[in-house]
Image (cartoon, rainbow, N blue to C red; front, side, top):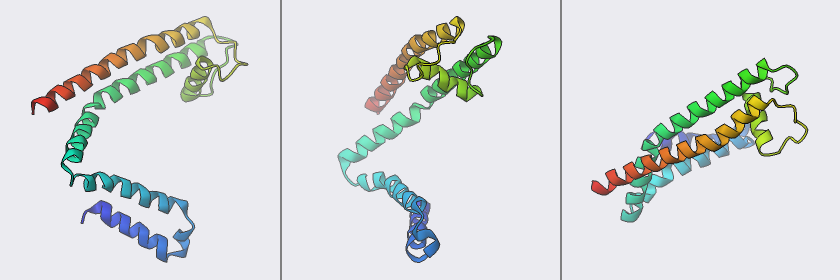
Length: 155
């Protein structure tokens, strides 16, 4: 028995026997989440599923580099839009770094029709980011996935 099973049993017993936890939707969410974490272990009984789960695990472990680059690119974009917005008088700005990031992407997807006071530098940065970064990150993801596939097929 491992810690996931112990935690799952604890929350099941707390949900059943404690009136304090019986109405809490969070307890049932935690129980179902722990069951789904344990479910791939049960699938490893079958040979085809074991190979597929191994491939998925190796792919997810090698995709950490991609997620790091994606996070860095998003933070750089958010910071640049925030700085550009602070330097421009009478511009519509978000109240924080994250607020300005959400506001900029809302403009891209035409969610916020009333905001037309964005400066030209910020619009240029938005469209450059929207075109260049997906191409670079897609190429990075393809390279990571092909490298992972080659490593798995050779072993």
